[in-house]
Amino acid sequence: MAGVWAGENVGAACSPSPAGPELRQAVLAEALTGLRAEPKTLEPWLFYDAEGSRLFERITALPEYYLTRTERALFERLAPELASRVGRATLVELGAGTAAKTGVLLREFARRQRGVLYQPVDVSASALEEAAEALTREIAWLQVQPQVSNYVTEPYEVERPAGMQVLALYIGSSIGNFSPELQVGILRNLRRQLRAGEKLLLGLDMAPDARKTVAQLVAAYDDAAGVTAEFNRNVLVRLNRELGAEFAVERFRHVARWNAAASRMEMHLESAVPQTVTIAGECFSFAAGETIHTENSYKFTQAQVDELLLAAGFALEERWADEAHAYSVVLAQAV
Image 1: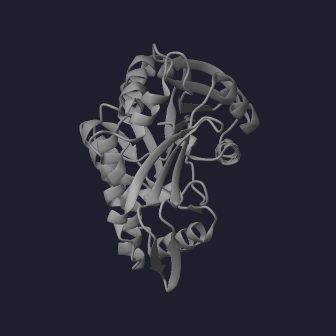
Image 2: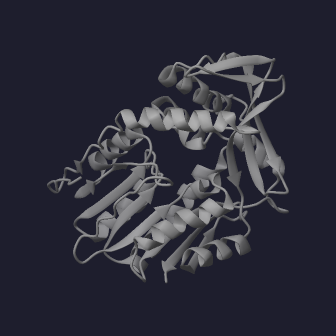
C-alpha cells in the first residue's frame, strides 16, 4: 500500500487494510487444529487481538518483564553506531506490534536522512494503527507503510526506495516463540527478500546462566499483578467472541514453567475441573489438570545464535548485550 510523504514537521501514516473475513477462518482453523491435537495447543499469534495487544503492552512495563526495558536501553546505546554502519535505509520490522522500542532507532535514522520509510508487519491491525499514529506524530519526515500479515504463514512485501538498502528488524526475542525449525524458516524467508550485504537486527533473550536465574525467567512470565495470566486467558475470550466458543474462562489457570531440556519458557492454560467445550459444533473434553499449550519462548546461548544465523543465510557482524548478559542484540549481514 502506498504512503504519502509529509512536510518537515508532520509525519504520514498509511492505515493497514482490515484483515477481512478470512481472519475468522484462520482463527477457526487454528483453534480446531490445535485443540484436536494431543497435547492440545493454540498458536501464540492468536493472543494478538486488540485486547491481547493492549495487555501485552502492559506486560512490557511490568517490573518482572526485563526484556523490553533491557532491549530499549541497548537500542539507545547502539543506535548511532547502527545508523552509521547501515547508512541510508528503509526499516522493515517483523512482528512490530506498537513499535514502541523501534522509535529509538527510527529517530536516529530520521536525524541522518531526510526521509525514512518504515515497513512494520504484524498480525494485529490495531497495533499497527497505534504504531503509525504515534510514530508519525513524533518523527518528522517519517512514512509508515504497515502490512497486516501473519509473516510465518502469509506473504509480505518489502519495498526498497531508490538509493536505500533494507535494515530488517526482528526484535523483542519474538523469534523465540517458534520452534527451532520455524526459527530458521522465518529467517530464510526474510533472507530471500534481502540483497547480499543488507542487514538484520535480531533481538534475543539469553538462556539462564550463573548471572541469570531460572526464577528471574519464571517471574517474567508469571508476574505478581496477574497481567500475564490475563493475557494468556484472553485467547479463550477471543475464541468465545469470534467463534462462538463456550470456554468458561475462569475454569482455566495460567501456568508458566521452565523447560530446561528444551531451553524454553512455556505458557499453558490448565483446566481446573473436568469440562467440555464446544467450538463450531465440535466438542472438546478436558480432564482436570489437562493443559492447552499456548506459548513457547526459547532462550539462546551465543553458540545457538551463531548456528541459527548461519543456517538462515546470515553472517554475524556485531553483538551487543547488557551488563548481566541477560539479553542480546545482534547485527547480521545477508550473505
